[in-house]
Length: 109
Length: 113
Image (cartoon, rainbow over all chains, first blue to last red; front, top):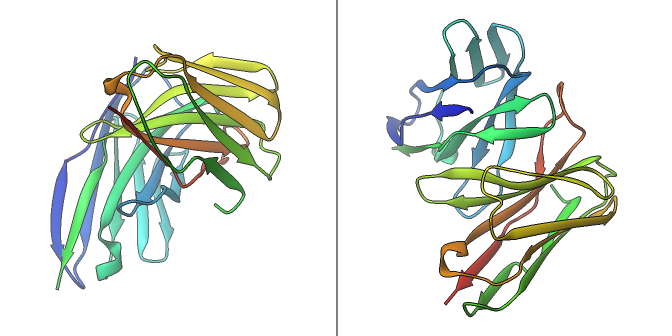
């Protein structure tokens, strides 16, 4: 099976940088996704890592290390609208996607 | 994503009654999925489909069945609803692996009394 762990909650200040970690145990996967989910809404895609290393997309960056079973999402210049849950998910070669429990981020003024 | 709609969006029912949730997509995605989301558990896969009439079980499939008779529609049925099935249900669709992301419907909130 697969197991994914994320911190339950994090708090950060507007304008700061925050790193949300995701650790996993799996026998194999195609890639790792990060999704954002605002309260009461559907998840929306943020990033996808197939290879080890950093993928940058504006204020958001995602990192993957397959050898360490570890990924993180880095959010820079935090804004109030970034208050949301952040979900990491393993892509099992397209057949299904296994999600972690999610990290609820609160951005304070 | 505006291309995926779920119905009903909210439903209250009683234990033992059958319930069907519908997911409709307009983007011709091959793969469709049903997830449930509960506090502390994140999104858990119930069933998924990789084509018309091709479905498979996910992590929490007990008590649920699915059908996909057309590419655009994926139905989730609770034959006899139980209180443990009170949850928010999300449908998703996608092209599969590689860089194919998932597109989610708006969710259906089901309460079983």
